[in-house]
Amino acid sequence: AAVLVAAGLNVSVIFVSQWFHTHRGTAIGIALVGTSLGGMVFPKLGVKLMETMDWRVALLWETAIPVAFLLLAFAFMRSPKAGGIAPWGAEKAAAAAASIPAGDRQGDLNLKQALRTRTFWALAAVAMTTFFSIMAASSNLFLHMRDLGFEPAQAGNGLGVMFGLAMVGKFGFGLLADLFPPKRVFLLNIALMTAGGFLMATMRVDLLWYALILFGLGWGGLYTMIQLLAVNAFGLSSAGKILGTITLLDATTAGLGVWLAAK
Image (cartoon, rainbow, N blue to C red; front, side):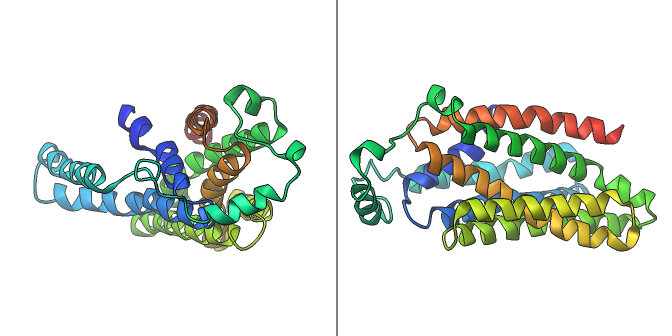
């Protein structure tokens, strides 16, 4: 849990956002692809290792991977401020800001100011409901598909489809958010995930794969868009506190989703 807080979603989003004023959606989407890629790769790697060795030894071997990434991050990752580097698109952003009347300009907000906005609570509500849904679905999908008559291999493939398309959604919709208004992309993701959830709730075998496609794509896009919209709306000065507060709220409902869906 401590490592997840120190090197997880919020830190990655803030770090990447520091480097970009334009193309920020694409950059965040690329960074967040790793969360789905890890979910696809490491369970299979763990199974392969445990086929040839004790699980304790397999766990020790797997620790070499995060240690290697830690060393790479320490060697190569730098803040643009430390090197005196202007973020990508800084000139365009400055020109756009200069065209806004001084009285209408809004700087970075702190946590207390953000909490008084409808934008914060709208993003928090979407994050809470979507994390509830994705944890409920992903944690119980294997057993759900087995109950519907799917073989174990097919049920495992169902998880792969959902997480694989989430990976596509994270990058793809991040890219779209740089081409179209991010709010519209955000609403499209909500519609896709909602449609997938309704199809899944029908309990119909012939609709399940369509449900997983829509659900995975919508969830992946929302994962990127919530972070992007928060950074765009509130700035980077207090992004850690603001994103951390949203994460605290959505983590609570995520835990409830696992338990309540199993009921």
